[in-house]
Image (cartoon, rainbow, N blue to C red; front, side, top):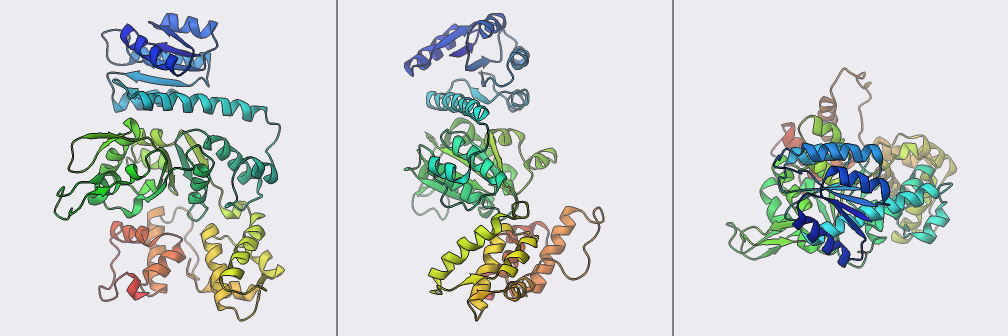
Length: 468
């Protein structure tokens, strides 16, 4: 049963009619006291809460009631709804435990989608609480489609089980983890196990989109919208309509683009560049980053309200060094693919090499391991890949010079990053692809860091594919 708490009878009536048409049972209260009474006497599964019950538009009345609801039931889903929307109120409400924030006048489809998602997530939590143990890999594979993900590690199995349950909802998901841990694979798995699996899955590398092109790339443009707009262009959100959009490297998004992205995530509406007509979109949003967004919020580099919009569910992928038992499985999977790719059916990795690889820190994670294996296959004259083959490839990739790294506190994280980039470029003679690969980042990410840190380079040997 859904409880509506709003002093406006017109709002209560509209919401009740909308929800009853979708077969929800609904109760309504005009004030805080009646709302608390219904919470005590009815089995409520979700609350739609107005922030103002008088001429006061500060939202304090709603926030006070939200605190009372949280004391009564800490896990009950709550959707805040107000005609006096503000960023500060949204953030304050989320901090107090609200699950979503809807502005009046609301979009019916968006509101219904939010309600369905939150109720479904709560049901999933109850099912999880009833599980006595984490399902094994065979059991997971019977329930979900995780064929593209190689793992038998306990942490990963727990994450996959959560991902499988969350996939059935439309909840926004934030996937975090170091570079190369497989965030894109998890995003694809979420889509593949969702009700939208037969709809588009659109990937967007936000780190590779410049500020000037952000609106055109994400929302599209019409012919003549700007100088080079010779034809109409469909934006990524329109491409993903009814499906899933995967926003990778969201931590690299600049401040002005964050504002534009927030609007479409909050209202599911946008305007095509050069056209003032507002369009709506039905899309499931999955984001990924290797950065600590909470720290970025504290430093003023990432909007707090945007963070709350994208992390209803957070999945943190463990680095490969914390799941070393998966390394032999990954090696088998990679070598099996390379046998077919290079027509070398007798390829194998020696036991000594497997043991050695399990002891490596592998800062580039699965991506670094994959690159080492493939390079070793290409360079080795034998079909048994030994320790020497992998060690040779490791020596030819750059991480740190032989000099000892500074002690913790001797250099800031930014200074360390600058040092690593300079060493990578020097080692690989300004060849951008090889330097980026050794650092475990993309070419576009390396370009951004060069600009950000003002790292000089020889214009006669530019950082592009032609110099590789």
